[in-house]
Length: 166
Image 1 (cartoon, rainbow, N blue to C red):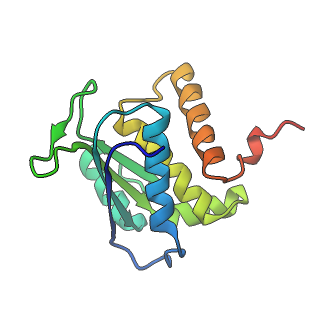
Image 2 (image 1 turned 90 degrees about the vertical axis):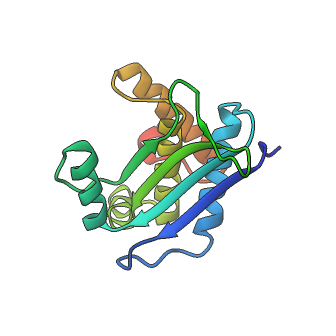
């Protein structure tokens, strides 16, 4: 069961990493899965941008005063569940997700899973931020991680090895 109309605008602003086939569809499915999990009501609009380490470093420096590259940045547009509305579509504008594909590729290699899984995971993580989650305290961090793994399961992407009980 899909949530109401969800518009995910995906832009590629990097040439460092070849975008895997089907990644746009996966990102859209991931956004949908998070909104369903969170019982989000109404239409939603999300912007996802793929960049490289240099691009995300610039944004991190500009907006967070951290002169370092990171894997993903979230720019929530809403506050306390209140969102701007796109007048043309009536959709709630959730905000922007920026992913460094360079960083995602390196992390996927380090964790021993696919680039697809890493991108989906970063998208799910960022979507939760757009919906108001944060991981300032331990408990919230654990709750976010549980939700992220639930979404990964729904998308048929295996759980990260750190979660497999031996």
